[in-house]
Length: 130
Picture (cartoon, rainbow, N blue to C red):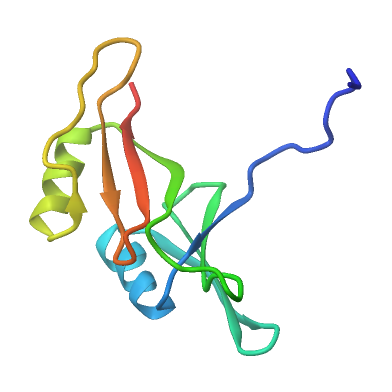
């Protein structure tokens, strides 16, 4: 294995497969409050849609799954940061978002966190950053 530094400098975009991009835009933009950064046609009948929290560098591409692959029910591994997990949990629950019943509080060094699911059942973690 080489010991040279990588030329990769950032995580730019992560893809989340969805069955309905318009419904996903409504969820990520209207419900979670993300910005829609891109919504452009590409290829044969596809749309490239990217969303992100205001000021974030990394975006989430909400795209149809590759041919023959299912959409939804993916554990995305995406962690969304917040300064107040309690408030975000309460707001999302009140908005009817599928969130865990309770915030996990495992103690140091694990921060308070909970999972939410988008309309396709894709899970994202909300983590309180101190």
